[in-house]
Image 1 (cartoon, rainbow, N blue to C red):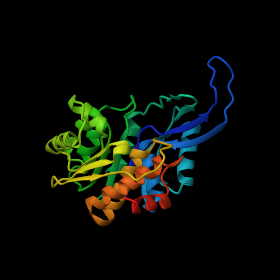
Image 2: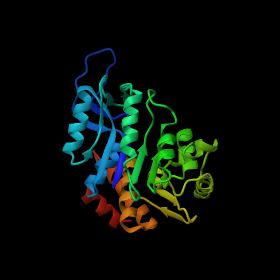
Image 3: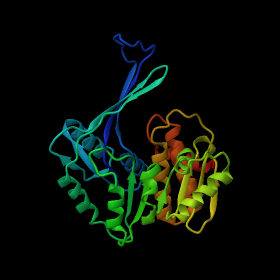
Image 4: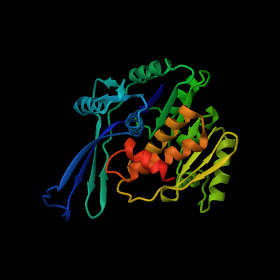
Length: 300
């Protein structure tokens, strides 16, 4: 089974406004609510392409109830921990001439509830896959990814980490199955600007040397590069299409990759399917749907 963890889920409230005027009353042209968080995105896309998973994490208050009910309504199995105090955050995504975001802070997570999450994860068994994705809220220990991976390292669980900079570098000693920085994040980890495929591959290899098993580097419209545990390098372009939404495209790539790999254990096919899935989200208003994923896959 695949499990995803979202430490700080959100209701993403997307508002479209024409001719936004600061300091005045503005009226929206369109509104939508999405259930946000990188782990939730991965679980949602997995469900859309026919793969089951369980979404874990923390929710609180009326917004937390809405997140849990909404994710369940999408067909995703959940086992969220409900906090006694606070409320899950609301992120306001204001789309006008320029895009502006106001992200909520989220609730404090007590030690006792962190232990509940550890107890859930301790039940995972050999062959399971765990996706740890996104930033860590300030109320959690900054090394919680490391703590989780340390607890699970002898259980033959494949762990995917989609995070940035030190959060990612610090877990490499626990040999994650897959990490997915983008090309800019990869350069930031080493304090360099990466301009060519050869440079990107060189620094991805350094992450293998530091402990990662597989490194998937997303490069937006330039496609993706996969460096595998056997040090094979695969390059994949992207299908043609109009980008209308970049939110969740990286999460969708992760979902497509693991869905394909754990079905066929073929790295090139996993890269191809992951690229198609990420592109399907980029070309859609929401997250990737199966029909578009398979259409784009056939064009790669």
